[in-house]
Image 1 (cartoon, rainbow, N blue to C red):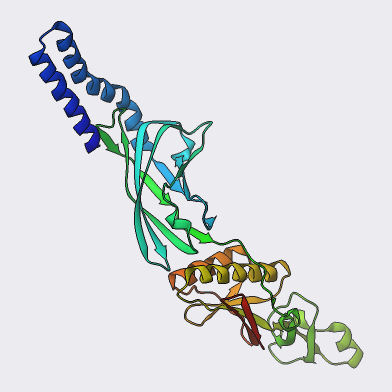
Image 2 (cartoon, rainbow, N blue to C red):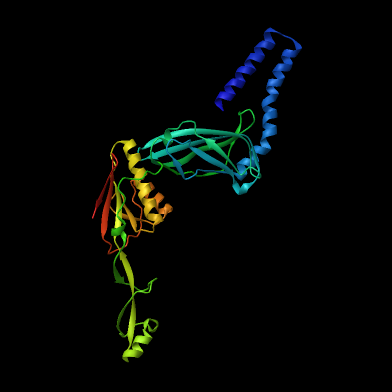
Length: 326
């Protein structure tokens, strides 16, 4: 904005000096045109500016991007309403963990949003954000809509939902977790059970009638209870061993993602060790991303870990090394 104002004032000063030293009718016309141009710009732009400022925009990201890819954010209009921007400028602040890097980026767009064009992707000019595995938190500095000349602006109501994970493509490790130690170890008593495995005992006062084993009770002429049993699994806890080398850490993360997806697809009981040493159970892709974000930001995530489970540690280290501790 300041640059545009400075350029306009320079042009206006040049036209004024030209009018003084070369006094002709067209010099006055040129001077008047330069005076009227910003007035016309604001008069034409103002309805679009007000509508855009009142309705607002939403700034989002893909949530997960690959290393060395172009980082993009999506610009959407609220409630998919049609908006026209003579010029919109956005300044975003990014904070990258675990490397604690803070950078500001400026984005601009000219055109329409809404019906027929639900979103616009804006590219970040620098690719530093996606150089290594990281959790990126994004906040807004300002969001403004300008007139056609970029001389006047109105703040735009906007919301930012653009936090993102930068992850490497998964790599198959040389050693995969042993599936034989990730199966059912034993059973424990529980209130309900999704399978047909029960323990049988004699009826005691307070037992629920629905748990009575009627056939066995009739056979022995005494009341017997079906007590549900829940499986207790052996659990493999994936433990990434990070160091100060970002490239080596990217390789460790790539193998960690492969092992987690390997367990998820085969419905194996899989957990991972958090930064504070606690165990985080990984059920699906969503919980995997939650774990990685907490790992990068050094903020352990609350997650229920099955009790009575024997834990075997699967270490992922640099130089392509994996170790299974039983």
